[in-house]
Length: 468
Ligand code: MN
Image (cartoon, rainbow, N blue to C red; front, top):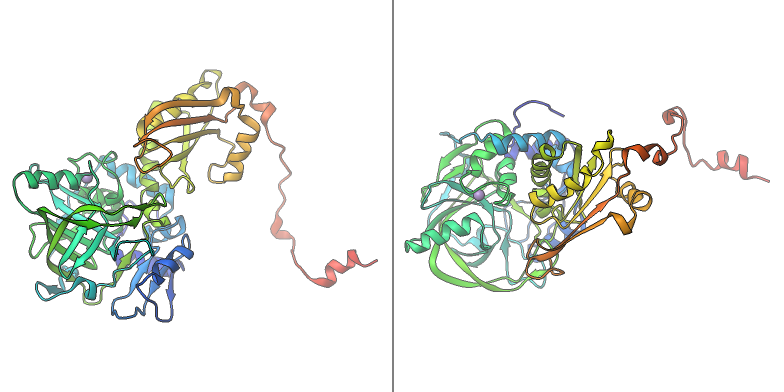
């Protein structure tokens, strides 16, 4: 694990490191883009990334479940998650402008006419309830027509014709705002969709606008994350920078006034988003490496939420620690989709620290709009072991005093238990006051080196005791 100040976040370098760490597994035998690959990705979710080499009717290999778990992420970035989080914090405050390079593998092959997206790319049909075939791992780059600032963000794209895509543009997202500004001018908005691109850019593109203000360029923040300028080249048919080493780039224009019916599609919260009108992209060119790899992400899969986990944790700590210095760590849990639930660890050493754990809850809710549940625990609780967190709830939380409910606050619109995003926040104080800490100290056993003993299932060894 490297503690260098620079990370090599190129897509191919990440794949090689994952291969070396046995976090990239090849699937042998022919597989179909119709439901089969998405289903295998779901069944093997949270494990090593999957490389599908033999796709029915297609030449390109597919990589799935790439950054779907901590082990894959650590192998891909070549560092552990704590260092990665510190790099993210650095990036949020220290962007590095991209640099134009002359060597651009992403344009080794250039197609300006005669292409058919559905034939060219092994686009998956994910779940039987879906409205069609969706490109899900596309980082969409645009330039704001007013400010000129570049933006990069993930959007699902439905293939609706040989050179046409429907694009899901949630309200309030930066690409949506840029699109609306172009719309007002009666202009189409140029975009570049990057498939299989620098993993630092994947992280910054997945970060919602609240973590990165609109005037911050995600390409520069990606440079800040890796510690070196992102190498870019100019698009062939669009005036936009594209990361030079990207596997596949789809260039095109979001039409100002045309819509199609997009969806349904299985979303990250586990429900199918219904079909709805969506803007249309007319594709002007596809460029790619000589032998590109096509990436796929399941909408309702671990990678979708893992792409944000460490960015959100870094943002949470960046906001909460200066306000409440007793906070030592935070984990956004898998069950809460790395977005809705946080476990916060505090270290209270002085009587005057009592109560600050509740200030920490409030700071957390203020920092991340979508947080619905915050559990605060002491520093002897392992926040990455749910059994230990539940132990804190079982032994240190008194429900009549320690549940703090903040009614009618704003959360995420997709949470169906809420009312269009209006939902109560719940804070659980599972800490003990510093002066009571001794009474809550857990029994400690003498340290023994377990390696000095041989453990076995040998029948004769066990029989020595069981034989009557
Ligand atoms: Mn943005």
